[in-house]
Image 1 (tube, helix red, strand yellow):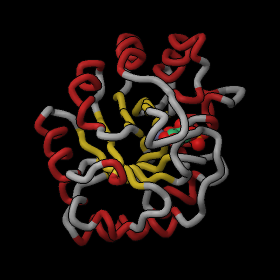
Image 2 (cartoon, rainbow, N blue to C red; image 1 turned 135 degrees about the horizontal axis):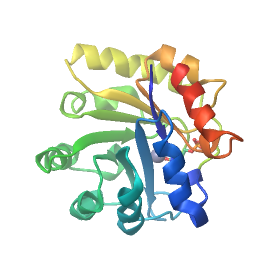
Image 3 (cartoon, rainbow, N blue to C red; image 1 turned 120 degrees about the vertical axis):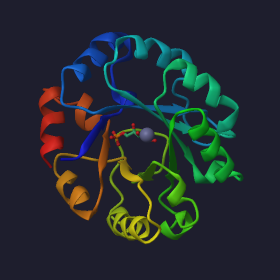
Length: 215
Ligand code: DX5
Ligand code: ZN
């Protein structure tokens, strides 16, 4: 069964506590938290302050996705706010190996995120050092976009790379995950699925999470 990580980006922020409590009583494993700076991505979302409030209510693992430039400037703040995982983009980190090492030294699970245009091969010398590979299946910045089909090949390639390099990384897929494509994504080798609009726009979000988990 796949790990399910509802993305809070699609939640009703006027009723954040209610939304986080809904996730608590569901079969979700992680809570995915999308941080955007309006620089690396064309959208601005929320930062450590919101995560600190969410942390007071959530019973799930806080899976933080940093879509920001020079993310290492904020590692301490996000850890303090309650992050359990931090994933950083390969596109924003010229010293990725060092940043990953720092996250792990801080006691966090360290993830590398990769944009749709970048090939799996780019991960070959870092994959053995990370806990999570966050594969973007849309261009980061917004929820509710359509899944890019080539991601399925990339998942298979990353899976191969994980075996070749003796990595323990889990593959987490982010963007455009629906009840229709979830099974196919898991069959390609995904261990975890992020889902924003599929969960929070559903008439019954707890049931949508259950169905994703069955995929
Ligand atoms: C996109 C974010 C995603 C987003 C997914 O930049 O990283 O986590 O919330 O939203 P859906 O599931 O609606 O595509
Ligand atoms: Zn995300």
